Image 1 (spheres, rainbow, N blue to C red):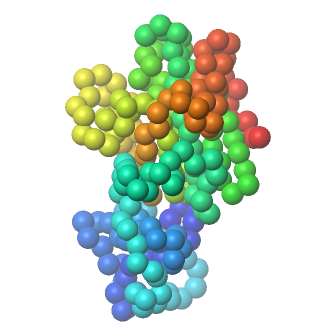
Image 2: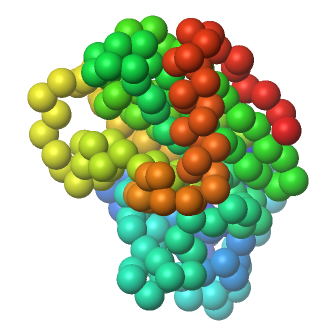
Length: 226
């Protein structure tokens, strides 16, 4: 099947009909990468040519990946704060900055996929730090949708993680949070992780610098390829 711009393997019955549960279908980007995602039926479309049905043994065992899933402690030791994307994925570090709270605010994003890299430094006017952090997450989701790639996103915002993945009740920024949740629903192959800020994590520091630059200059650069 096709999910946006990517060809994927989708679970089906012997006749090639999608096997959905609650409107979602298990998909794999590769048969042996150890990760199983779930996509909405409406987001999948047939590829050209006849349907090819493979047995379950065609794919290796995999752990289901859910929105906001955090790695186990053992896994965190090996994959924490990666600097290179895995094959086929979009790896992003996003951050926000604010001079005063609220005050002039900026967003910084570093995105890597294949052998490509883009950086975003965006001034968003007067806003709170939380709005800046959430906007960074939104920009990452929009880029993942544009590229048609699964997203692995790192943010140092506990607030963003809380309202998006831990069921925190939002008292403010409800419209922005609702918009991000809609993007997450349309981008089921997304993982969000928390990384500690200002702890020497190279790409997170770059994202912070880009956000601060936007605030200092009161200007946006848009996406720039590196």
